[in-house]
Image (cartoon, rainbow, N blue to C red):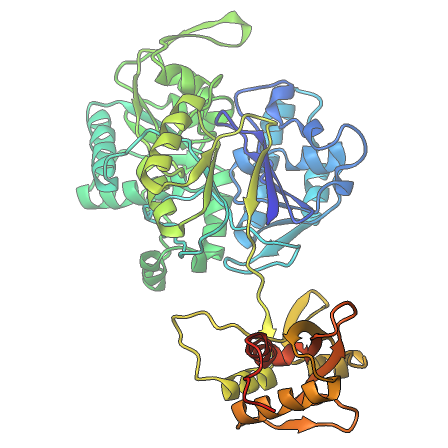
Length: 573
């Protein structure tokens, strides 16, 4: 059995994901996210849990980033360049392409616009990305043991397929639990509801603000509105934040092979990411009269263009803001979704919110149904919940334990969970040994385990089972012979050589199919089994028979011993 230790550095909240896994003496960090709701030390994970002093390279073997959302990769430059880590960072090709764009955009908002210090620089982002090793989906990278992670959604999007995982039966499944108690309406219902609300607002001359993160939801909702506008022949303009989403669409075009089947088919006629009705947004457009729809970043209304537009439009009840994803505590998005209608902005200014506030979950995170579906598919032996709110996680934990009868853990930040595993180790068997084993017995039954005798050779991290002869030859060793000797007491007052003769005649009569010989030195052999007789040191009427055999002849040796223990027939003279 092996120990697997999991320590979430950030767990019992939603906002930054960072997990430390120790397995087989290797330390792997899964994700390195930041929290959007904080501007102080709480923004980044507390890396002092890993080590109090020294660079993190000495303690970590590698870092794996699941995807490019900032709550999963936002702390990377801080972690590698400011705290100090020079080891490999693994992520997929699209994540490697998009991650630095999001990091740079967030740095601009935080440093250039808000004037914050103690934040990473543009150069640090570049230096950090040099340490990244890009991998393909389903590619195995040999660090030591390998892992498969990511935000997943069991429902397909309009631009990406649903998460798919086979019955891999892992020792441990680590899953986010952002929507631990939520079961969302069907995707189609949510889409219909979204289009209805946008349409109604535009028809009454209102403006619709949709705060999004640049990637993922933005593309999905753009495709949805583009199709609807075309079908309904609507004229109200739709805009998206310039720069970031344009770059994002460029990467979707570039990584078209990673999108779903329908988009790939459509791509032959036209690129789904080149929109007819959706134009780039200019800051001055926010003051234009009449209806419009604007996609603006970032998604939680905590800074940037989405917050600027919100402040301008919040006072008009004709307008609407639609929040399509999760908002962490501390953000304006979270406050208005909690029902707050008077907000204290910078400079103690009070902003009264009269516009309509709607929440429609098009989040990348799986809901409770999706989490249960993943567990059913993967069949893990243990489940560990991360990236969720404590009360909701507790509810989901009980549900998982009841339904699947597996242990479920939800450790607090910095708490370590230890899981005992029984690793299965693949062993190659030599063809010679297989042929020999098949020749000895019947062909093996597929349903029954087959016992095989051989020598296990461990070399260069691989295991091979070979015949003892082959092992001796490969390793250049001489064979030692191990013999077992058993003492059998026989009542016989005759001389020793006479007792030996009686034993010989008895065995010759009973073991007709075996080679039984009486040797000149007074000993008897049955095949390779040796029998000698000596007088008992204290009782002259008792003889001691020494029966000796090699372990290969264990069966015959045991049979002979039990036969002699029954004594010699009286008629033998």
